[in-house]
Image 1: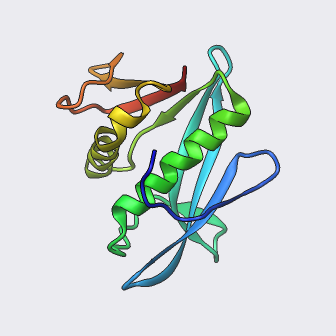
Image 2: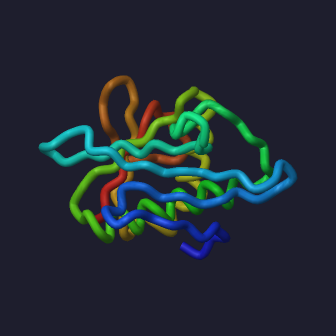
Length: 147
C-alpha cells in the first residue's frame, strides 16, 4: 500500500497507536485503539478518533476538518497491517460513530481495496449478515482479516 500516511507510534502490546494530523487546524493528536470484543473467533474492535487530553479518551464524534482525510485513513489502515503482523489470525471490526463516518470508512476501504485484497479478507455487514466486501454496496460495519 503506497499511500501517503503519517508516522505513528505504538505501545509494547500493539493495542494503541497514536499519530498527529497536520493541516490548517494545526497539529491534532489521533489515536487508534484495538480492544478484544470476542474470543471465538477472536475479534478486535478498532476505535479511532481525536485524543482528548483532558478526559484521556478518544473522541470519535468530532470532525476536525484538517484537510488530510485520505492521509489519516491511510495511516489507520497502516495500523491494521501492523496490528495483524503482531496478532495474526484475528478479525478487526470497524464501524463509524455516525452513518456519515461509516460511509467515509467505506470510501477509504474502496480506495485501497485493490491493493489489500490479496493480503486481507474484507467483509461488510448488511441487514445483520456478513458478506464479502463489494465496492458499490453500502454496509453498516466492516470486518477485516489477514489471509
